[in-house]
Length: 518
Image (cartoon, rainbow, N blue to C red; front, side, top):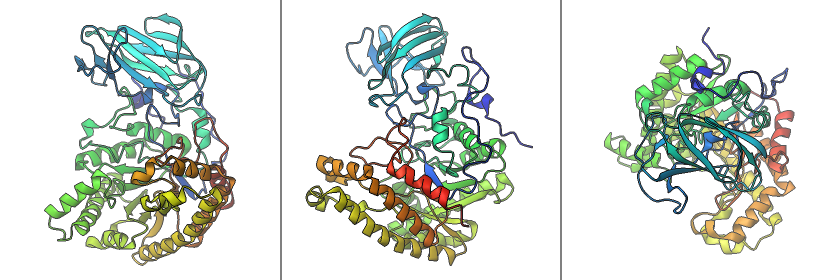
């Protein structure tokens, strides 16, 4: 039988300072997600994101910033002398390298004594956000009182034996961060969700990765770069939660990349889990670079004289090519959910993608994102809507939910007529300003207050009931945890240390009361 352990050999390098042992949350006797009809998108890893999955918070470190020692200029612009294979900087004389951890989160991260471990020879300083309690080569203990983050500086490094493999471990986790890398609070939060979509963990909308050698690895200095999170971490989390992973293949990925990814998943994912597979994300959506790429490829291949149709057809064609590679690696499609994605509000995009070269015959599902309330953030109406009350916003959302369910029914009928099912790759409210409306603070404040109102939870229950009644199957929320701002109130929860919120309670209620109906 193929190995599907926690992948320790892949996840961590051989290093000192750590330990084995247990730790983390013990899995429940009965899997909480076994009959769950819902999944969630996980918020992307970044130095400023509010969700903290890892016990080692350095896994979300910011890109290295060239600085001076002592600090005088935040960013000198001077190139580093080089870098290790895993992205740790080599310094010029008098140069320092700074990075940020847990930045801009206020007090919403753990307090207490953290442990910083590192390999190599050099000097690490904590310039703000932490006080050094003790220090010996390779190990620094720091006391952290949460107040908007930590500034770490690398002020010296030996070019022959450079500082590398930095870890900054939350209090009480030094003995377990290797064997159980995910924080128990993070694991417990998502135990009831059957699907984890890793679109943002993979930085799908920003990635320039094409070759397997260019991907993120578990030993890369941070999982918060444009390379995204290493697939090994995604697989380990899916195994830990016994959740089906949803992987988005980069739009630039070569066939070899796709084959290597599929092989890694085949060899290390729990064989009782299924894989949902998607080509990139929202290739129909012109705001993303993958859309422009697909359009250029489709036109160059002569797939249509109409640029948008050529774009959709190339997306369909490339999806099937990727599906076939996974089929070959897995020896069939029994463990795969092969997804063709389209725009919910424009069912023609779905029929176009499904019908090109009969792509539906080699697919399992059509996926849409039936958001509600999105039109309320339009530029043209922002001045009026910014004067509304929260209840007026929620009344409009309730009306829009009914309209969205009509589109769900149309997309479901289109999918089923072609022998596949309808699922949601993203779902939930979409209260956010568009273009100039994004800078309308009154509108942003109104949308945040609307998301916090208890009635928003009732709307989520109505919305999910409608999804079920209109024939939808697996519904994947967008997204897990994120602080609200002018860019949206996407998270079911706002911060890592919050577990009570209307949207989160509503989806848990729905999972409890609606075991999978298909």
